[in-house]
Amino acid sequence: MHPTQSDVDGVAEKAGDLARRGFLAVCMDCRYHGARSGPSVARRDPAAYQRALVAAWRGSGERPFLLDNVRDLLTLADYLELHGPGLGADPARLGVTGVSLGGMHSWLWAVADTRVKAAAPIIGVQGFKYALENDCFHGRVSSLPILFAAAAKDLDPERQRITSAVVRAVWDKLLPGLLEEYDAPRSLPAIAPRSLLVVSGAQDPRCPIKGVYAAMQAAMLEYDELGAEDALDLIVEEETAHECTPTMWSAVLDWLQSALAAK
Image (cartoon, rainbow, N blue to C red; front, top):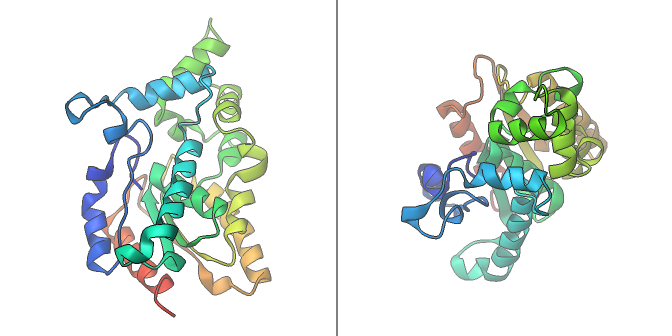
């Protein structure tokens, strides 16, 4: 799964890496990205995603940040379950990886769908509530500037400041229940005992590492309880910010090949 403001073309090289390892690699444009951002290739609209987020904030009824895309991934799993064998794929060995926005989709799809047997979210797992409570939400806000500027203007017309209250209101609107029900510390444990590799950068401002550690600690308790501690792993690159490095990607390829090996 691709990052924000990217598309399937942006992850084509990674898909090729997976194919060379023997995987059937499926890529999907997220909503309002790539081919889903305009009526034709020549008319793709790079601002479509940000406008859709603002519209959702103002009551469009869509969930273009994460949730609608997870629903699309559930539909993809339905398709692969039905047609995978004819494509030379084994639906019982379904895995997912993605970068940044794609990492968040990888995490949440695995939570929502037990058909996902291995998930390797890259620079995507984060503690949204942790960031609010510890005033380290600014990196995430900077990735969605038009959305948060619009929310600040709507909620505080005079000062238009992006405060923790504004950020909380946006998450409550776009991702109902996130902070209490399916933030990383609450939802990562639900992936157990299936295979999970979380890949993070220690200097990542969008996914503060202390929030990642808190989520992984919660997950470890569940994996230990189920006797599946070997199915959970964490890679942290100490000098890396919000970036998928070549060493991260190489580690994910090796891990997926092992986690999804034929039994």
